Length: 216
Image (tube, rainbow, N blue to C red; front, side):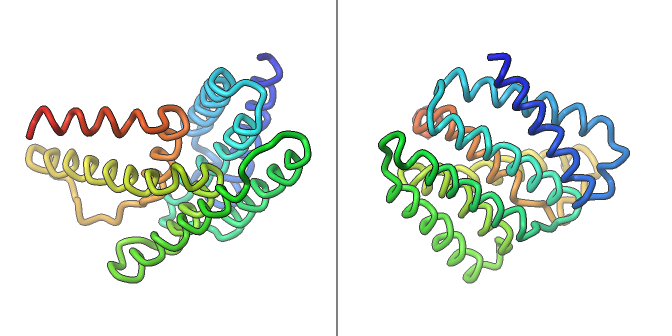
């Protein structure tokens, strides 16, 4: 366990260094620095407790820093850097190659996940203009890591989370003067949906459907 904490602290340090490069506001934001260390360590420990020493544990622990970097930079700048997406996909690919001859796993599943994560969001982006190409890239990365079994669910869940957020935002506007016309970054919803799928798998949808069933 202590090694997991040390590794996660190292990841948190890399995240903060990367944010200083991509986002100038982060250089003096101590609150975000503290938050990054806490969330990185907590998520890494929870991943280890759920998956143990496994390919999934390595995959998801390495994925978390990319999710945090991309989401925070997008939140402050409304921009997703290609290098963060491409680097994440390359790192995930290297993990698959390293473990390919050590343990058996369905790598075709992850390749199909990558295709699902790219094609469906790309079509949505083209037809609706509601997604940016940075969002498409992050979907590709997340679905590549999760595989095609969960790729579609990540896409659906991210839109559900965004919908719930805008409902809350609209209700808040009724009582307070909140500008809901401001452009809202979408990558935090993708990252959050990915994290929820990692820990709950399909259970989050079972809970959602049961909740809907009670009110319908």
